[in-house]
Image: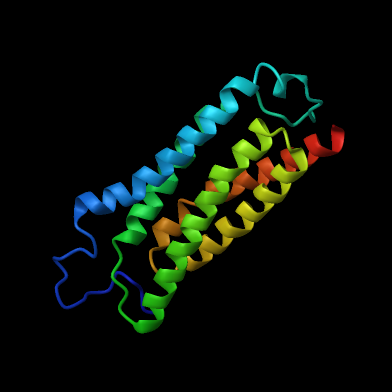
Length: 176
């Protein structure tokens, strides 16, 4: 079995980050992205978005906040777990650094998509951002796997939803 990042270290009782900074580092960026998304989306749903031609596979509007609440919780949980890992080898320490960069880049792309799509009404730009976000989510999952399998697996529904959102964004762009 390959080494994992959660193997013991000189002081296994000492976490990589103390609990409060780890919790803040995992939750605050996710909440910031969620709030930014809500601010950009909410005023545009009954106006601009309602007037767009949409494909038959468009879900009802009420599903989006439900899905995103669940997904943002999983994203924060995943980040929290990886922030708590202590890599056992130099290779895994490098993987952890790269994985955290990938995690925060995909989160930044998540935060960028909503203002591009909803606030700027840029369907093509939104498609570019959401496709890049999907790539970064998949890469984050891949990088999280050797560090914390559960942290990687809880991002799979997020990747699936963003793949669906990419197809939806592409269809809306095509139809409008």
